[in-house]
Length: 61
Image (cartoon, rainbow, N blue to C red; front, top):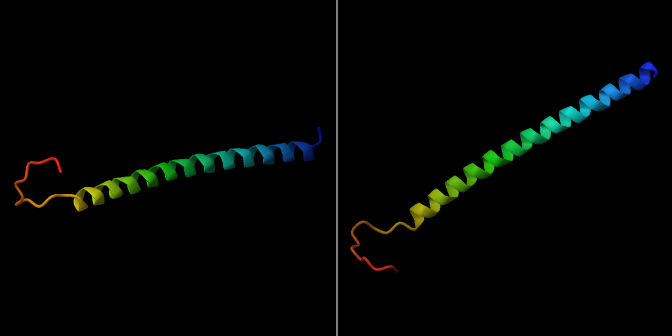
């Protein structure tokens, strides 16, 4: 093989590895962002639907 083919193959492998690493990083970032978003969302819903303390109604609704 010529040196040009070897360099092209090396660049191709390097680009593939870098793109794969970037995709794994993006997937991890997406997972963390979704987890944080839903944690905040559940917290807001919990606070928004909380009953007042003075209310002594023990009914289900």
